[in-house]
Image (cartoon, rainbow, N blue to C red; front, side, top):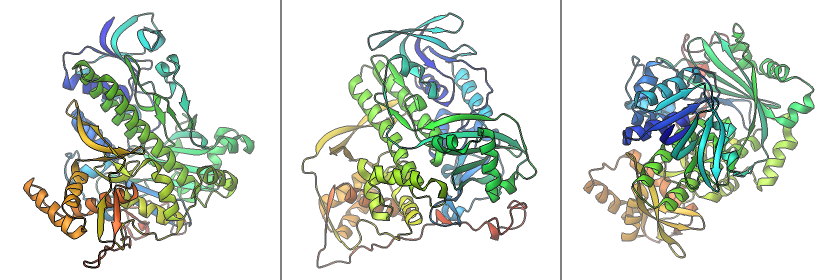
Length: 579
């Protein structure tokens, strides 16, 4: 069998990559080789809003919406420095409009995500790839990788069929079939060595019902690990438990015994499954964070979890997979156009390694800040000690930001797909330190490009990888586009911030962009990222007001108020005491 692109694995990474290849170059012959027959269960059900944008570009968002998955508007956590519950919202104050479903990808739905039953979700995506023209082979996985040096020369399928291609993509998940065959080493930068146990439950109660189909995932820590509770449909819920492998071994319990003990020890989750029944599809896996030391070769690329994995506490797995699959497809299309393969590969690797590493580092911070892990104090202390991490807000910011706070995917200052504004609120909760922003007490900001080099960053759009100008210094980048570009232009005209803002407003108006509250908030986050990454030096001028340093209360990160919801919007099983 001869194809242009051979994709190993038909999960979200493989189907997304194949669909984008066929969308933007329908003449390509794309083969997807999947060892299982869909539908099949898989964990990784909780999404982030960035995925919805990718699904819309793929032309599959409406199909996913028609499947009637719960709409994720955030999460409820018991974590950190108190026994209180707290909510992380995608929408201001968690206020979700009640609108009929299926809905359109517009309005509030631009900022929400799905909680998906992977047996249904993955089949929709794979069928969509098939409809776009991919040749999909289910129940016929890859048995052997043929290679010559750093080049793949062919695949041998389980039925003996040999496949030749110009490009090969490994989207086989944790199996990393091609990665292992090509001898690519992995780095395990975290002391986190967790295991996960899970099952699916029928007829568990949703903790909250907001609008039509809106809800929040539940993440509840116990003294020796944490539980996830993710409604997947009106009747089906994914319920899992994560703990260090060392703790599981010391416990003397079987995986299922430890799983049931964790549920019994957590009052909120225990109450939600009081009248529910486990399906009996109990499963386990090791949950160790890693990143591949390279993600491409002469004619192959790694996508999704074959290239790296971060602890699931932040629900980032599917986001990393969909994003890398999209960028791999666009990279292959540009290689076929004759563009510089080394530049494309370098940018793909740098971008995806940074994403994974940021989420690994963020997960370490979350674990180290969990005061509920009473049985794991030595373990969390080891995380903090190895990281040189002090949990006060400013020290945490310094440690987290080693790789930089400028997140070109967000278009504003951020870290690991979380904006700086939200990160401040998380640090405040974790450490109990109110904290301050980095620009408070100043009114002047002088651009500092000393020692920086001009370079091109990739911008992935409509099947293309387009270079955009940027500066790089000490591994940190400053894109000269988007809000950062406007901010740089303003500060070039005047280092006095209010004069710079006035100049920026004129530039934005000329481009047909209204300088509203959202733009203003984005600009302040860009300014803080530039201060923290050293792209500007702060000044205090005698004339002109100084910028405030206090952090505003976040409408996206608040103490849980489910007890005030009207009857019928919250689970009857949860008592006030449990909440």
